[in-house]
Length: 572
Image 1 (cartoon, rainbow, N blue to C red):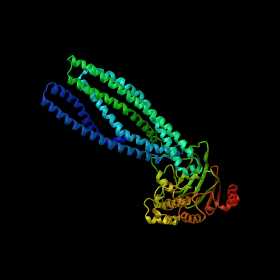
Image 2: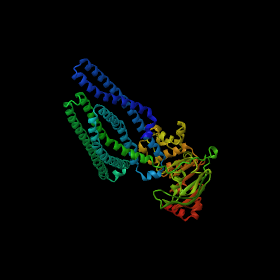
Image 3: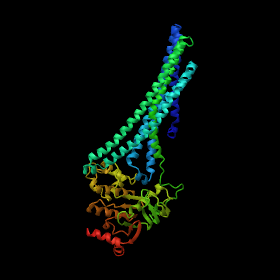
Image 4: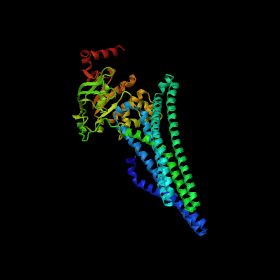
């Protein structure tokens, strides 16, 4: 936590000053209590009694000011730190490669971003501040006990280890249970997130009861863990309070006998009991929040694990600049590339794969499912790095180029288009955040988005809902194509870009893509061979290798695989 707190050390200093003022005022009240009894009541001096009581009123005001300064600054630091942690987590997530998200459920990741940071927020504001205040009162109380009666302090010090021991032993169990609780909460939220996003499938198969039971099982596990954690925390607080106040009672008994024997005054005993109760209360309070602090420690551990996750794609220390302007031509070379996905290391997606694509060339990648076509796109965008071989664009190895500069070379239209919550125009403008409204409208017209957008309630400003749920598959595809058109980048990557379009829309969008492709290097992945027959070159991929390439007519004669794929589609 300290690296996040350090930038706001001035606020922390003010909080400490407020803490010192409030704690000092409370500690001084004990001395005032002694003087009220010895110099006011026992001595019978009304003037002295009035003077001391006025001082105690002043101490109460000072305590109020100190509490305000401490709490307001601690609360500010807490909210600022939690905000920074969330931003840090989110920024780190955006740097992680797709390989990370293949192995982690989104619900678990979001739980660390929301639930774990929420735990920290509550603890830092209340528990940590409360524990710090009571720790100061504990130390200050011990000092005042030593000043008031060194003899009785010995009994207090003898009892402190008996109180601390259960705090340490039970605290370890609380921390372990707290981490388990956060893990189970993340698991439940991940299941809920997955089910909600697949609610149509759940309902179509009438699996509502099945999913409800699965979610209930996870929630019940969370409940059992939470009950055990809180029972342990309650046991910790109860044991400490019983031990602490038993010690106070014993001290009061011993001190009472010393007053009767004339070895100490009633005021001294009252002050000592006041400080002893303060120490006991502080110990009890610390033990009570100790469980909360351990819970925060469990959440903090999960956050640290996430932030410590290394970025699989390392940015070069001294990146090589990619050509810009007219020199950014989109010249692509795969040189004997071999690659396996991290989740399937035993299976090669590409094997000794070599392919050169000239600037401005339209190249179609075809082949059976799992042949490695989409992997070509993944490696070009450097979502992964190959285990062998090299990939270059415009003469620069992609590993040597700045990662953002590299990805800004490509405009991607995926088979399952991504639509963000927001308007049609906002989704299209994602391709170029600085684009004017006129540019957005032109891109929408080119991709034939305008045709259906005009029928929407607010046209291009219509909100599409989460993941574009208010659009059909074909409409989402056209929005994604408009985004790529607006981006106007040197290389266009089309992964089954027309797969969800009806026949009429396919003709219109294919024409728009053809016009756009004249100015760009274009790679097209297609299973429907009718959409790529006009490509400059068709590359046939099978089992991660280039097995044939040429025009449609050439491949029909020279490639048995292509001929078979084309014949199967023609038969349909």
